[in-house]
Image (tube, rainbow, N blue to C red; front, side):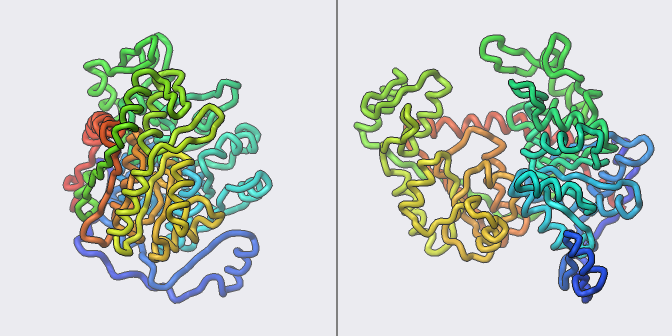
Length: 516
């Protein structure tokens, strides 16, 4: 907590007026030169300005800057809830540090859609950031290399391309970044440095790149979706193993010290003292916020919609669950892990056979989705699907439905949705579960098929239930097949959430301490 003690913050009880900038930088000779060099600079009229940052965002800006103060932490894990405005807070801190000459070039790492839309949009939408130049490192190798070699102040890359960037920089010989920002840092939770083919994973590449940087900023709304064991990877990239150990496995490693590991199933169970000791070691680098400090959100209303399978279909479900073989549908599960996935497929209405084709089981979830669509009476629906056959069958029933990541211009799709021009937006939680600001398009989301992944579940639910949502209530419908594995999913998620909630509570900032 020493870093916080050094903070100098200020409080704004009322938002300041919106800043106006009448100058169009692109119309100036300097602006045109910058544009020809391939950089993006935007100055707008009527944009939000720095004076519009909330108190907790000012605290966050100052907290990030302590990394580069004498005796400051090596980096930070900011476990802020989805929709808390951590992107603009981080960009503001980076802007200050760039202006002060403390840092030279930050690299922002994010999921693909977030890298291509959220970070550029935030830079362009805030007046105090509008003169910031940025480069997005995505696309084919030639395009990525050109973007990486640009002189833009901030570079943004999708997480899949991190190992490529490490190789392209000569494995550190020409690494150009002195700061690493990791958006949705839960991507580090597994902590595996190499693949089975001995190639560096994105975690492994970051572990190497960390040696060439002066500080790391990790942002996540889900720091421990599967338990305390997820914290090792996040901590290691910040401090190289100083707090939780340099090795995750091994006789003296993180897991051996704080967990009991089943040698057959590899299931981990935290030892009685683990949570207290782990959180004590992270108290100077990990911080969270009380949601009441940053947002007045409308009520979130989860609504289970039960569908009942016909007796004949339900009998076959039970037989398949018991024997791992369905003669009716010519499907076999080779083990219990495969069976769980097959049971979720069964509940959704189809199953994959051995040749990769899917076989029809029932239409009940499609019928329930159609009823929801009719009852919505024009309110757009954001629908989460699980399997490829879900997507194909939903699109066949709703030909005008739009798939979020199907278009090459995802920003255009997002803007059309936010403008109310899309009646039904289909998204896999992996593609829409992190960071996207699509809360202006609707207040109604639907789980066509549930997931047992707490991170994806919470992130998807936060696409509409976040700051900026203007509706009086946010609906989250869950279509559940009675008597199937669908009904076991929510208790599993609740158990995982209990641990993560305690982690967030243990790292919470008391903003009242810093009000002057």
